[in-house]
Image (tube, rainbow, N blue to C red; front, side):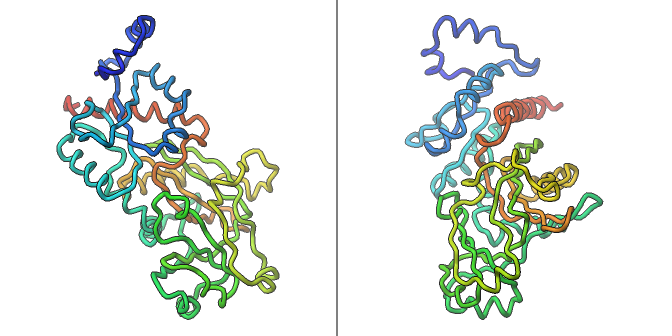
Length: 340
């Protein structure tokens, strides 16, 4: 159903265009997607090209008013969201229970699993993914919740190898949560600021692969990352070096002249199996993975981060992929309702 406010603002010409839109047989009305996003996310995601293509496919994006009860708005077919806070999470959970016919992307409790880097990668580790196309694991890591003075001792007992990547324990999507540091020596570990996760740094040729997942669709892009650290460099370097959001700030490496052994994308069958497993284990349909290849190998990969509802605006052809995904959800709703 078209929102009344939207219909009132449409010109006669737009109304005529609306009438000639061709929908799939089972889709007799617009797919109404309510969205609750930060202003920054709205700007980066809801670009004119996406909204135009969505409209041509019979999809209408409607902003959710956070100052009004969610149940009083809509009706929605799909709710798309990325906001922080316990109150919002509870509102969504209540809405999911009272409106089971609406698809909420994604369930708040499932998203919460990715907000803690201690648990974020556990699903990947539990999968122990290895087949003829390669192996996927996670770097060895250690959680430090307090008392930075004890970090050197704890790291030694755990047997972690320097250098170590330090990341905030909480990954809530804020700019601070994406900051990371690289510690080169034991003494400097005391300068870190818990709570945090320490990951062994894996040389990966200075390139990481951002694997975007939208339902069953997978898109991979290359990004420049931190450069490799040689044994000689490690022996003569000390201190902690701080970095911004590396993979986001870095330029695309898709068109760079790279060594083929570094640039080669992870095998598609391996990514498909990984994505399918994580969709099931995480209960999410909108996320991305930061993956690196162990330098010197062809088929040994590590997942170093998982993000919910990432910057899809940077994903090639995201407009077509995302609108097709939304239409697929609506078709699934129809089949479920019709008992097909």
